[in-house]
Length: 114
Image (cartoon, rainbow, N blue to C red):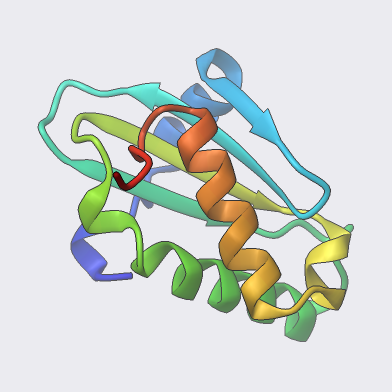
């Protein structure tokens, strides 16, 4: 995922977590909130419940790689937060990618290809 799509402000992330709409799966939680800009911004979080630093970094890398395939096709004007869950470490990359796609389609940010 490119740098320009990253959301780094902790205040904005906290606002999304409090006021945003959430969609959950056993691997990932997706939270979204409309923004005033005409762009997509995304933050990826892996808490200590996922594991140590190495496991958390691996989760973030996997989620960034999964999102990079979909980021250009998403509806503009939304901020996203992806939260890794423990099951993510045991999943294959295809499972992570499919789960991410399913959550994005469920949130209506990604339209199903015709």
